[in-house]
Image 1 (spheres, rainbow, N blue to C red):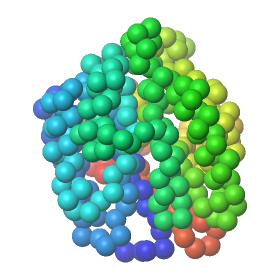
Image 2 (cartoon, helix red, strand yellow; image 1 turned 45 degrees about the horizontal axis):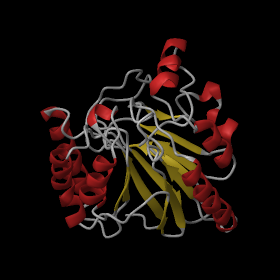
Image 3 (spheres, rainbow, N blue to C red; image 1 turned 135 degrees about the horizontal axis):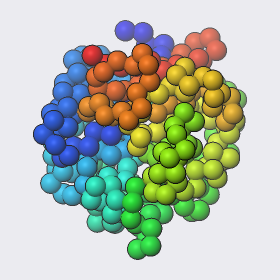
Image 4 (cartoon, rainbow, N blue to C red; image 1 turned 45 degrees about the vertical axis):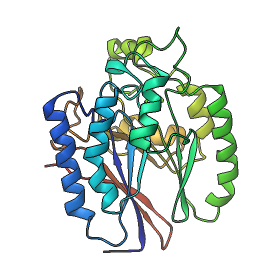
Length: 291
């Protein structure tokens, strides 16, 4: 194995508990990860961008904990951001109780809070909770998200601090669940659906913070497996936001992509991010786990 690369395997939207097929897909995913990387001394960090469970109840959280436990036992580092489905029933009814269950069983640490700054070698991942401001009675409904003023202010401080490290070659990645901008190839009707109950409400404010300040942005939620620098090049989204690597993670436990991109194979969707530790420190992403 090439130890001159830092590797991060980006996974998302397992929806454990939605159906027996979904849960079995998550089990199959774990088996594939163990087969591919379990015997390696330096394993990739496993980054999950939300919707680990489907309803956020304790039974599903315990089931997810059991399914993921072999990865922890094999020595993998697991990092998570929560999704709207982790926050409550069908992703449409956020509650603090569900989030506490997520902390207890998925994070396995009730004291972890967001934003979180995780170091991987000499690189950094900023983890955000895109449901943090969605716990009030008036906005806990539907599948949209909101970072909130408090989280964004702390996040901005982290970004400012990390710019000096970026100048020395460190890469900065940001992960959250909700897509912070509309997919440019979708119809006006679909855009309206997002705006009415599926979007990140403060996505524009967030994107204004990160423009030109990070090296990769990854998210889930929409179940679309897209490398914006390759699959939707005509819209020039990475250039617009000055982010070299921009990824929508799809679903890692099964395929239900509402708008599949041509040339993307069926399978368990994931992105393997690799950062070269020599030369110019190039950061790339390749599809992983497809069958």
